Image 1 (cartoon, one colour):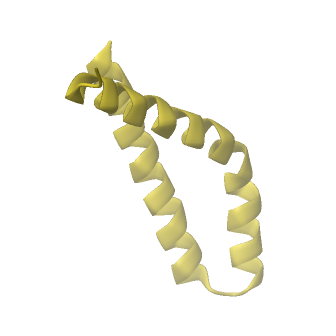
Image 2 (cartoon, helix red, strand yellow; image 1 turned 90 degrees about the vertical axis):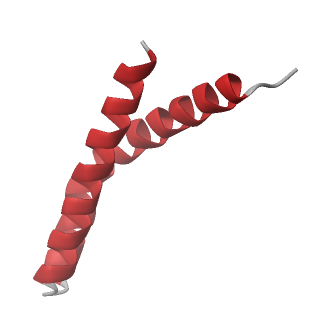
Length: 64
């Protein structure tokens, strides 16, 4: 039987996997956005990425 606890655990593991694969791509994404001369958009995406990483780390630590 699938409980809320299993669903929460899966969501956190999925978030961790997504972040793990997304982290190496961050510099390339930032560089591409900077080349488009859209500094505000690139800063927005970098900030969004940092916030999502911190939330993911906080969620993982909350489970342990």
